[in-house]
Length: 279
Length: 284
Image 1: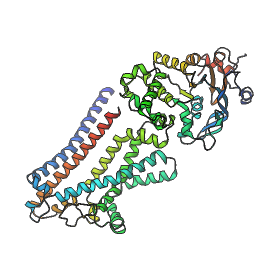
Image 2 (image 1 turned 180 degrees about the vertical axis):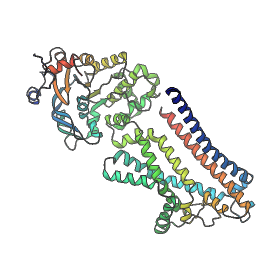
Image 3 (image 1 turned 90 degrees about the horizontal axis):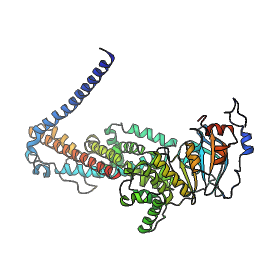
Image 4 (image 1 turned 120 degrees about the vertical axis):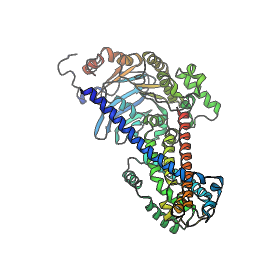
């Protein structure tokens, strides 16, 4: 790999397109596939021609400097961007082979299947129990109260929070610590039994111990879920993910196995970013 | 004087100025209440509260007007709150992007500043004549409801806007529909703010005289209203009525009625604060 003064210029789109598309061989089925995805905030193009295949039951990390489009891309996958006025998506996003942007898609059902955890933990100003039960209630997923309680417990256990909150299920969720609140948000997302979990910098506001717990959780959850995680933290991406995608100025620059991305990336730009030379 | 000392002096000066203005405002209010109290406190009695109008000042009571005020204000609330809150939810949660919603919003802001007598004239034409409600409680309450609707809508919109967008996002992300999000998450958080706006609006309505005079509530009414179709009068009109009499004894009656109206207002506001605090505690 040669490195010179022009190293930080992005590779041409043609070069990316020629190489892009299929990621390295893997034995798991494709869960999410974007094809030529463009995304606009008003007149600004935030994503340029993104094509990527994300595999089932692995953790895929999205890295890149602020404003590179990684969070925007994450939010196109459950159409959360629809809420923002003046936005528009072009191209295809297939989840389990179905284009989620084609007319007639049930966005509400899509969002149940594609769960999301936000950067800032945002529990509802309700009790711990009601936070987890909310998704079950609105989706009509629990018939009786005992069934509801069982599902809430199951979700809290999955999020490794049950032992800490079992005696105060009916206290306000806002009284918990930041790390507990974030795990509650994970439990809340898991309660409605999604297949995919989108995590938008889930640990960026947490202390190292709480961060470690979230990372352990991600590791445990990938046997059941397909996890996509946006992070600013290189070490975190290296620790938790199987695959890493590097975004830069709205483009997908490189996407490969995490160990390859961090040890022998194909693009100089990726190497410069993961070694901390910019970003 | 160096710069730091001057800054501190200015700071102190501003504080004193603000306190002076506050004292001025509260002082004139206190003087007003004290005058009314000294004029009317002697007339306050159970008989005064439960009595009916009379030609003799010392026999006259205000039950007809007090009951009229409470009946009218409850009906006004019953009409204005559901319509106002629903309109605000539409404008804030559903229609924010459309041009028509923006035109409507602009007009509502203007409507909040229209003099109340205009609403009275509208009420006279629309409710009393066209809809043939006559000079009834329903016509009066409908007129007042029109008057306070802009205030209810605007304050509800403010309360909805103050709900953090993260709450909406996390609800949508769980597969909630718009209505589920509004009903289960946004409204409960906005409720204290909505309540405050509603009570302020109703407090304004309870003191209104002009629109009710213009729909004909001034006519002599000797009995408390017993249905939505009854003729009625309200406390401010009774006060206006008594103040315009030359006899001193009626002036004392007016002062006593003002005290009753103030007490009613204070009770309403206290109830609002109590409700708001109760909901806020429940949420945090």
